[in-house]
Length: 351
Image (cartoon, rainbow, N blue to C red; front, side):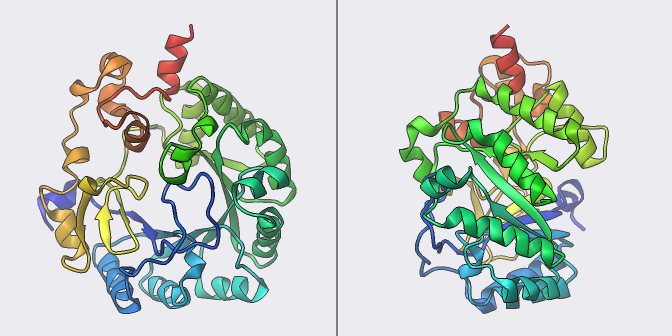
């Protein structure tokens, strides 16, 4: 085992199995629509799974695009579970039916998360007509067939006032867990500039998360773009992670990595800039890419002392590292820029 591996060991991976999608959502950060010709073949995808097993990966989250577009997805899931790698999936729910849900259950899928981005009118306006009812029906199918049902909500000005109503719906459906994240100006969302929430609205989101957490009716998970050294968030995160520590910087290239549809490896699938691509599994193994001392240099050798603005003078910056790297890239095009969506910064500025 190399010194690099001992210091940075990969536990999880987000796998963008396809760019193909049956929707073209207004907030999609990847602008997913068509299946691209350089997508991994079944043989290449199976080889990637073998690589994941070789490095001891614990779980994989399948995403897209719409992962269920891939005809060979059951083959890939079966191989993942054979290799003792837990499988989660994020889907829009459009293609789910009783037969497919039963198949996913039999294949050993742990959790299926459905995107719910508002009530019927809002959700359908972001995605497409009929998407809301399909999402709700898919959640019911998952629950009825014993699969852990999650929901992912991307927050924008279009739906931030609907969070309470969405929560009531999800509680009524007995949804197991709910991740909420901030929509950022990437991909399709970059064309919806009036959807981007204001920094101070993050405090409203944190208050909502804390209230939901205290109610105890649904497990709520603020995504890594929401944070960081806020007492309410720290309370939630410490319980969710079952440890006393809270946010200690992005895990991209430290404990996790992403793989794009074509085999490109990067720290996080949300970061689409090609300069952050560390290699491709068509040419090098995950082990080789991960253990390369030059890989993920932007994260592994990040210098907190070079952070700008309030992040540069913050008492937490050496642990926090400025929060979500993708937030800063999407907003300011610079990973060393001030994170304007940090609750600690916002609280100081609004006093």
